[in-house]
Length: 241
Length: 124
Length: 240
Image 1 (cartoon, chains in turn green, brown, yellow):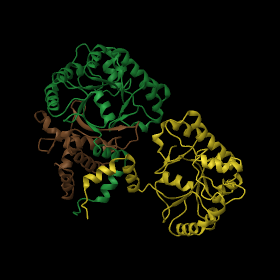
Image 2 (tube, helix red, strand yellow):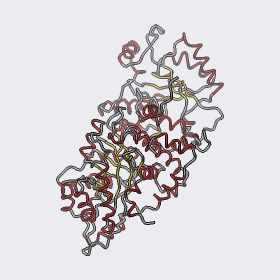
Image 3 (cartoon, each protein chain N blue to C red):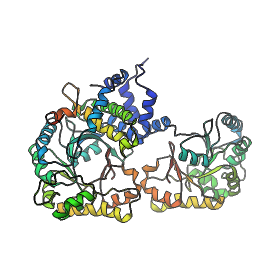
């Protein structure tokens, strides 16, 4: 064997962090799904987004939450083409104006991760809110009326053909030492707020900085109380009930 | 690259340049404005059954290529310092780089790089 | 000879998430050798002596403190690797047969005790062991029918060895186990041991060794009881 592959160093490198081999396992076992993450979807990039979604619609199938339910249940992907999820983070207004028409044109399903308290911030305060809550907005000048977050009407409209997921309430990083009060607000109340507006259950919770479910044992009771089925970290979508 | 053997052969021939080039490209992407591809694992914590899943027909054995690719990228990101990695474990950028390089198989089974999807929009 | 099939091999080793996890522990050097014992009957005493003698020569004994340090520093400080003789079920023959051997070679063992077993009246111990999957292989060994260790014996062992809790009544805790049963088998089981040996027991061991994260409902009881480690058949997990 050629000396360029140092098997020992390779084995050590992939074994250092437990998440590495866990993902290796998911890939070999076919238990994975492709995701393309979007944050800002500004008008100047609209052509590029259209090119992407068009490409996805040709080579992949859209993925509804029901498809994921079925995949977990039957362990069999029923379509010829693999699935791909465009994931839209942070509840920006540009998702509705720019991305939604493209998704709808190509019949592709987006998964929208909404920090739900952002939606209730007054338009004139939204930019400040973004800056203080690590929402890296880049399209702040797109709208003269200063509203850069989606409105509840827009989210309700999106929920008809797309998946709405909870991304905490205030784009809050839940740590192991986060207080009970903060956990309740960011995990449970945030979900109830979305459900009140869209009149549908929200089954997916997404952390910030994507740790896995078992990293934060303290959060389990709130995730359970809220009634989520799935938790999304940056490496895995975990079914918890 | 079509098969896991191709990935292993590329390692044996010491040809890590193409992986490093992809890492370089990934580091220059504007994550707040662009679509950033990745693959996430699906883990059923409610079941301890060990039955494997069946993927899409068109996927073939491409999952094995991705698995090997993810391990190669992990071993390369592992060489970076914690400061360079931010607070992420090496597998996180590795999954992103792997999906960039091995986005999906084309009709002949060859890996399509994500860059090809948006080639008209890449600014040099 | 059959040719090695890489794809089939990978599919096999990734089927169960615990397989690759064990691979990781091995590559990372975060593991310890264990030899499990259940009954230690007189007929096997010579064999046990040969074993302990062998361990003494090729390994170092492992105290709970060594494990604390290993987790803390991530460095095994001895030239020889460690090996733990793990002695399960609290049988009386442990005290009479294997304990003198361990003590002769000054070798530390870890005793996993189902703590309610000790308080079962002597003439009910054999029926109790039959009903609780405590397999006694030499029921005739003691004419007085006491097959469990008594507390004096366990207190004596505790002076030189590690005492760990193996539930109260050798009870299999599942995801469906009631709160009441969990409390009794995890928390009360430890309280009995703590009180009897006069120090804190830090290790809990399940039956059939599921891992810590499998049973999230048990977490609050393990925490309330104050355990530091959970042992299953693949892992020793530090939980605080």
